[in-house]
Amino acid sequence: MNFKLKVWRQSDAAAAGEWRTYGVSEIDSGASFLEMLDILNDRLVVEGERPIAFDYDCREGICGSCALTIDGTPHGPRQVTSCQVFMREFTDGSEIIVEPFRASPFKVLCDLVVDRTPFDRIVEAGGYISVDAGPKPEPNATPISPETQQAAMDAAACIGCGACVAACPNGSAMLFTGAKATHLNVLPQGQPERYDRSRAMVEQMDAEGFGGCTNTGECEAVCPQEISISVIGELYRDYRKSMVHVLRSRRGRMKAQ
Image (cartoon, rainbow, N blue to C red; front, side, top):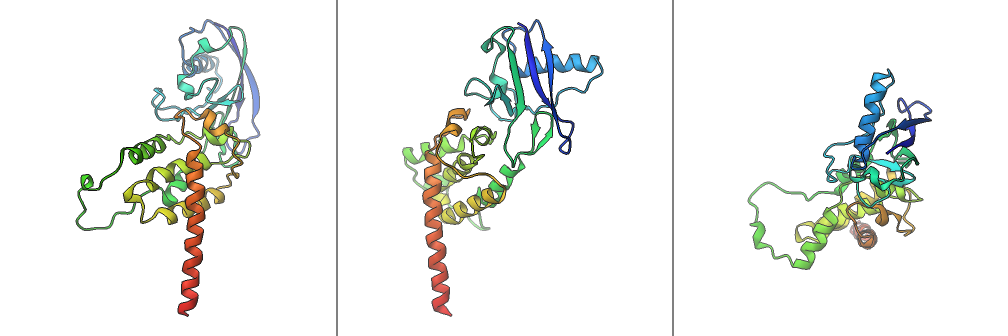
């Protein structure tokens, strides 16, 4: 199979960047999109040109590192990670546009590589359960219903790839933040910090410059793990309750004074 690739090239974060067009030929239909880029990069190295930088790790659809926007869709034409997109899914001889995930908080570092550390800071703000020193209860002694367990596992399936942000017209990270908060908030162990967690993670998300959610549903449509937008509703609910708790706490302190 033969293709024409229109690829975004940007040497570093400070560079302006530009589109470059490359032709690739005799690509096996069973090759993955990343394997096709490997073939192109081998040729560029031989020709003395800098290879195209792109992220990857497992190449098994698990880690979500391969954050490419292919023909305008984060990860590509199917609801999978970029490494699981195969060249047989494109028309022979077609032009394919390849660019990085586009969102203001995701700064382009080089070519197709973006900085997704804003996601890390959102998790650091509250995506954990605090554990004090001392004896701990037996985990199996805490009953958890199958429904709660399933809800927690469904939300925890988020791999933090960022496709939801890249697909959202507002650049919102609510699906990611909702998933990371919900999988802890629904469990008994997550209850003591539930509302503080929700408020802290939403505030950090806003501080990172992500946009607001207007329920367009584009995030759910491209998520390779098929995270439901119901986690956004869960986060909204807990965030509103957290603000009530803050107001009550302030009133209590004022009365005490």
